Image (cartoon, rainbow, N blue to C red; front, side):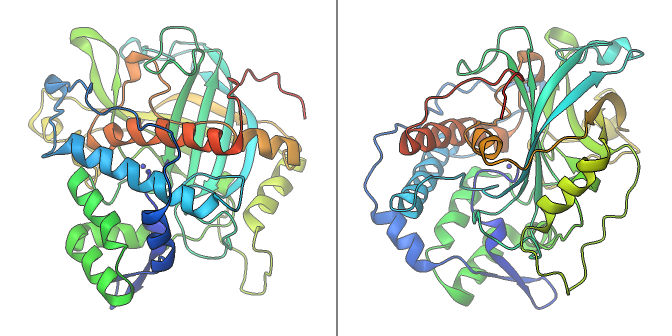
Length: 399
């Protein structure tokens, strides 16, 4: 989920027996510390006021509310245990940023009427803060290790009422470099977190049992990705969102694809830079702009194949022959020097959540409903621990 979603499980798996058995590498000591840590005083956001859009296929999972609250509390305890004596507190996942860059989001002038909803208005233009990251929970992890990679986009100066009140002029899009997610059931998600309390092979077997073969293979694929440059990777939302409002609303997924295919081969084993992804981004942006096509795919439920595309099952890809991607905007990242301590600190204090959104792009499905509670609670916790007063970004920041 920021993606990767709000859990600390993807980066802790190693693949054994051709990817069919996963062994958790989480520290049992860290987990025990988390479970015994004192409370922060931050109250988890309530999961009780969720509205399900049955017409778009949303349905509650069994014991979803209780599982969401338990997941939130477990992650909160983990962060307190990890950072209470090691501030500043970082995100539970996507803890290591490769770069936070100021960008331009230009909606196509020729956008078709059926796609003109929310921020997607023909010719509309927004500034954006974009954060590229590793998916794991360790902010010091070596970039040469396999991991999911994230791209979080925050559009600025977006008019209209938002679903969350903490930011009034932003719209967030969160993506990872894989088209599907490894789990969708909140109860299984909670069971997976609880499995981390075991160690070694037992934790791996527990994870395999919870995820099943399909989920385990997806987790292994995400966790095994090694790239050469975050600017050269493609990213997907993995989970669905609403497009439009009223009777004509539809479900969509989105993706950011480099405008020009570039060599994304990781460096040779001779490279000794554990932060080579940040260096690769800066080297590119020292001399050139970067560019992504922003794409959406919408579900047409008037056909049997389209109706079969689920908003709740995040382990299944929406096949492009059924729901083709359509370009709606261009993201341009101009040449810039982003590798500045003040700019890095600014970005680490930002909060990204898919619920920073217009109602026309409301997040759909169980994974997104978990994120609504977890992301807001953990953002409040980090700010409290770090004594940070949140300031909504404007694009006029100077570093």
